[in-house]
Image (cartoon, rainbow, N blue to C red; front, side, top):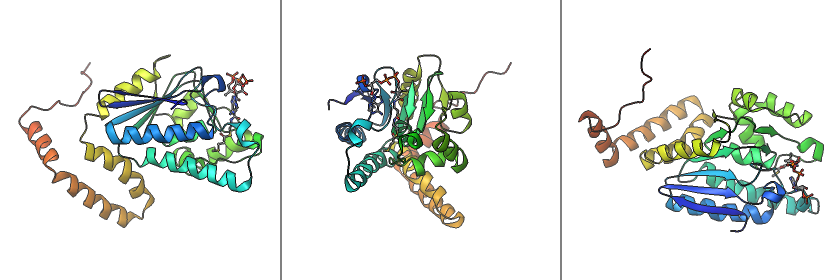
Length: 258
Ligand code: 1HE
């Protein structure tokens, strides 16, 4: 996997986009390597971090490669992105992205498929597709829009304007702004914590929540009851509940009163 480095640190898989000389621009080969790494993480880890080597998280689609494609090759390429991104969004485990530098075009699409986004303060976001004469093709029209809404998505795509990390946090693109240079450390800390949850709960959070939100009100509530009951009746849940009642479980980290 030349374009994606993979490492298993305890229960957490670390996936590093590794094409820093091209700002981690996503070529077809990189998408294929990402698919292998994502499948491996889903099969052996309890959570994962996705980050980028070099000065930037990801400069999006490899524009050099894509200037040469036919319509059908373009469709196949977009569908390949969808396939790997959906194995992130609806895979076996939660993925946390650690963002820094440029998170642009397809880089923002990748981040929008992860479950939590942590960013360094100097991170910036943009969708320059309009200027390049193309359209989002890596699920952005669905997944970035879900985060920021159609109005902001239109603004970004039409004007190509650059969003600061504070603006990105305000519109739910970023969950955490880390201390300078610490996005990876913070993302790893969160992933390690997530890895201690019951695996079935993690699986259902990443697979059921968005689907419940996408369904009708009544269907959503019904689906929720099924999922809730399924988790509550597992031996793991029963042991975790017993551990709490017997004071063996960690309490919430409540901030100390002034
Ligand atoms: C690239 C790419 C790329 C850099 N494809 N080669 N994405 C974009 O429109 C963003 C295009 N990139 C940039 O605007 C800038 O590179 C950055 C702001 C991200 C970073 O700037 P900087 O000064 O750190 O790097 P650089 O000097 O611009 O680029 C370094 C090299 O990376 C250079 O190649 P070199 O051979 O001249 O050294 C660049 O050509 C190369 N490079 N970005 C190919 N994207 C599924 S649909 C998704 C649609 C999209 O993603 S559209 C958005 C595409």
